[in-house]
Image 1: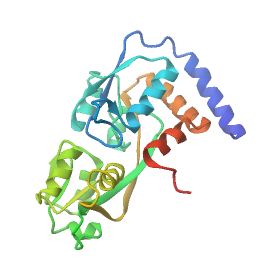
Image 2: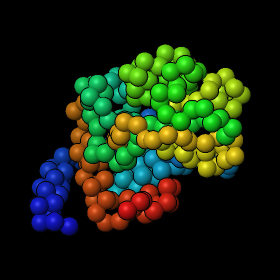
Image 3: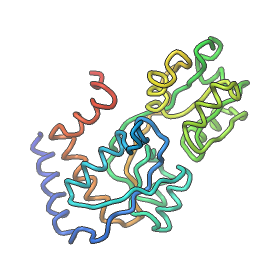
Image 4: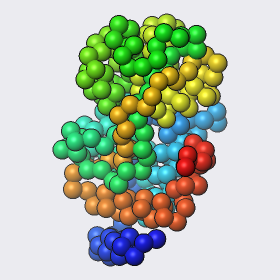
Length: 247
């Protein structure tokens, strides 16, 4: 740990101590329950995933109780704006339009956008190949904005990733364009032998934990994310879900 980082972290921790008492009531945390490998229910019906376990570790470190509030992704930002929930973790990309209405923690995951096609499709290789094709993506996400910027207009929007995969497998669309982690995870697990990821990674982006504007939780969670990245807690959890990061 560098001398600068130690001083920076110490200063933040001192301000954290001054923030006051821990929330007396359990936090209400918004989450999208269909976003493998970040949040989903396993075969035992248990809620799990990278986001779920990361949030749980942070909450335990901070001594916070919480309960999940499952919702469609497009309802998360409005719920934060209305203070219906105290926080949200759902692979939420940090972007300027969202930062105008909610607060974000320090980024906890770096991702990008990719193309998913059926295994026997050899026609689609890059974003340019989607311009005369039917494409599915997730409602209210950065992938929608990117497709618009590339003048790709035949786009079907769905509330969760399960819908995207089903539409592709049944031939309703030619491709899915969305965040790289869930598409790559699906292609290597439930969709193995049925679908494949093609082309490069588009538009690098970062995920953050979101809070209502002015929430003191943002600083608390940022401190803990930074600490976890320094002490190996984050690396251990990352490797569990995604394998060892590339050097």
